[in-house]
Length: 222
Image 1 (tube, helix red, strand yellow):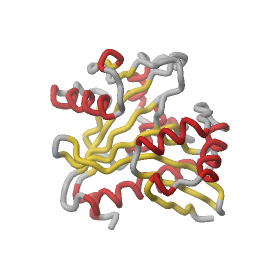
Image 2: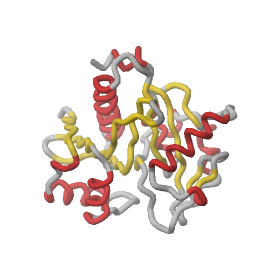
Image 3: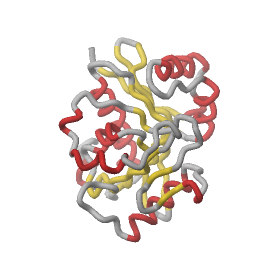
């Protein structure tokens, strides 16, 4: 069955959909309940839902906005169900968000920023360029500034964020990240795993990461 993707305003989310999302999270590490998901719906503008045969397989809260004039896709809480098609679901959600970005910001490169709890999250960045942090690369001052901007956008107190490691210190709860577990960890650059040596799972730490979708690549999605 094909993956069906729908993106809509968070204000259009109903109780039944929030319950579906909570059920999906209950099968993963986050175990977010309806209360947390309701707050996410209030905090974000858009929600993308991916279904197969009518069953929810993944979702993502996000916004399209300009940060300091830069076109951006900011991804908040998101979760992909652990099925054999999880990579297809993730790709479908990301592509739909990027298609909307090219409509909102035609002929412009777009920054995509989010948080990861594990290295598997980097699979969402497969089509992006100039990813930060990335292996064998020292982030520039401007890129570290982007990390601070994103931390602020996520409502993270500056005292909890390390701009050199891009790590957010947790508050003993599962972080509101893009939650995904890859089926093919061997296909991810092993260097990415190094960024998670400072991530304390038990404390709920997360890594802020971002990359760029070029105007030429975005045009191919239209």
